[in-house]
Image (cartoon, rainbow, N blue to C red; front, side, top):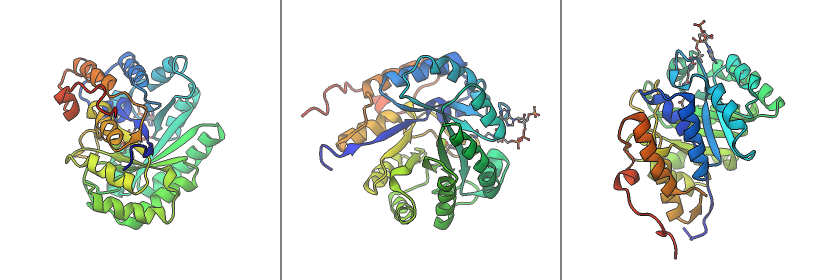
Length: 308
Ligand code: HMG
Ligand code: MG
């Protein structure tokens, strides 16, 4: 790739996807500080939390507070998005004036039942009026498809199912569709197959790649997806995260590693790796555990590495 390969949009999911799977529950004040530090590192698209049952995901309780404090502080152009599980989730988001939400389903019925107590079709039917109402209220709406490249209960997923679910989310009004490798089983050949098929029916510019690094393949998979034309990737600072309903899922691919790799291929991300590495130290103190990211572990002096 050339040294000017274009711009990649990074969606930072650490404050939601990351923290939802940490055993130490951070109070909203820490979650707010984390988001402020991420914004300071150059992230412009972030997940701030979720409006789901606190019995299911106690780590995301009081997400209202996160939005209420930050909406008055962060620049207008920052897209701070919140997961909405159902009508009640939308009510909570609407009440505090959230401007960006995400709905979430999967290709696999077994996973979707465990995650949100619905089949995939039931979830699509339930999300349709939620997305419509969100759009009518002027919200940005993202749609997640989990288990695209494999399900912990059903294994490999039929490609037509992936097309069907992604297409249904786009048709109901989602602005962007994030394709989740929930348990980190994807490999580059499969990515090429899935994206080649999706390209024939869906606009590539609205597809995002959401890779978990369970088997150390996430960076390779991002490279493969970028080669296929994907220009939006989700990642989590210090590789925080996982999914409580997907045994074997590990953290999302680490944001600093994605940025380091993509900048190395000549893409522009606008994200400051040094600041993310410093944030890793803050997270170690807050979460009382070592951060496992390889770039973080190596603690290099990165300044000027990419200058000519
Ligand atoms: P349910 O049991 O079918 O819901 O759960 P219900 O309507 O029967 O309600 C049960 C209880 O939850 C009630 O309380 C409700 O009030 C409460 P109770 O009467 O027992 O005291 N409740 C709520 N409370 C607050 N906010 C709400 C809400 N809804 C119900 N919105 C439900 C269905 C969806 C609620 C539940 O299963 C749930 O919250 N699941 C959490 C799912 C979740 O957050 N999963 C993780 C995110 S997905 C992910 O990580 C994958 C992704 O990263 C992509 C990838 O990697 O693949 C996106
Ligand atoms: Mg995830």
